[in-house]
Image (cartoon, rainbow, N blue to C red; front, top):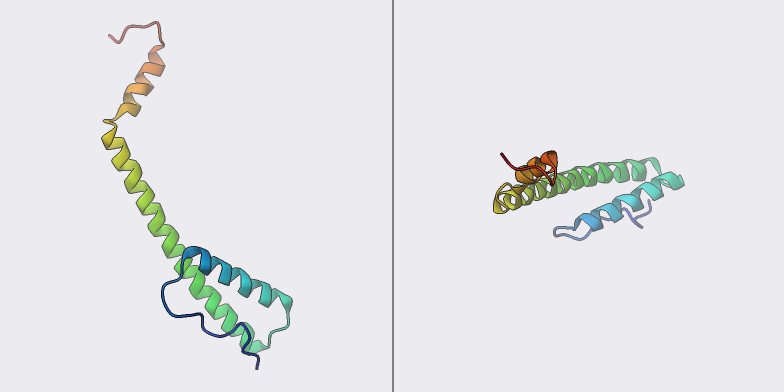
Length: 96
């Protein structure tokens, strides 16, 4: 069996970009068609784990962005509603 790129990646947390790069490499190797059945299964298994990890990282990033957006809206004092009302009225209309 070849142990070329099927070795376990280095220990420690990988960045999202590193995980995506590894996943792309696995896909390219599998598409190349030069892997044995066992190597293909191992690559597929590692790919599934990477997809789950990437999905988790993206979910956390989405939560952080949502929190930051909500905090920003609170800091601005809800100016979006005022702006929307002003846009409905027009520049030449009075607010009452």
